[in-house]
Length: 421
Image (cartoon, rainbow, N blue to C red; front, side):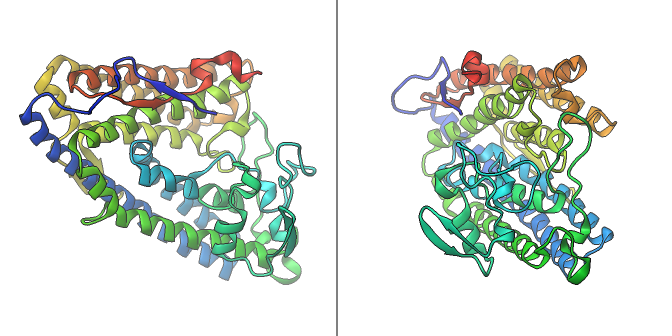
């Protein structure tokens, strides 16, 4: 769905900074960046562990209360994680791993019952597989024994089964679906409404297979924790991601700016926002089951700002900060630094307006509806803010003398007619 979009200042050639002083300062900037990544992933892990405990409590004693607590823990876990997405794109170790934990959109019928899918589709023969209800099934011509639902089954067999990206079996959004159920409200307000009795045992069980549904939820939660443990370790002292970043200072700065630009432009402004608005399709919401998309977009914006300013505020209020990209840019062009800070603040403010409206009762679903002028204005405010800050990122690339930065694009922004073909 995305295509490479090369900034106009990007030229093929050796990556280099123009002055030795900048190269020395760059090492300090990269160290701050790695420290922020380490803290951010540590927070993501800690909140996922809280979520895991809440899921264990739900499974052990299903009730309205324990389901609500698990949902609240999932929402809290998204706050730090969405800020980590800025570490994608430029860092291969993150980009190669990210699909395990945050892939979307998903054909939830692969996992469990849903009214959204009547059966297999031409695009996905497994769209209504319903692993929860079927302990054995055929996949790519092979009989699969899913009597025991394990993290290995989810990750190695089901995730992106048949090579279909919509067959998302793991990560935050699989857990989200199992906690909320399908959102069948279209562009009307309301999230999924899965009853707590979907996890009740015996005669109180609704929609069948409550024991297997609980097994799937537990396995997905265990896998999320394990995946975040892995990534947190990669950014800790001695970790592979940190070492790769620090090995080449110029390439490290390229990674930082590539992550900022790609998340800002093609991923958030394009695939996550503009595309859904063009299609007026609530299925394009990033967190459609929980109606949490407004927070997803907002914290993506905050994450981008964190990297430029060299500052991260943890979930417990702890601040990690140090030499930053802003310092490097200001040393070259104070006016450009002021512009970049302004563009970042404006984008976060526009995304914050979406968040505020959603929390006041104007759901993101409703914003996507055809003819919703207020919704379109809010979403496009965010899109335009993200595009504007990407354009300034391009100027930052030039000011720092960097080459070869490729930013993810999106047909919704670069070739709108292709969206409807």
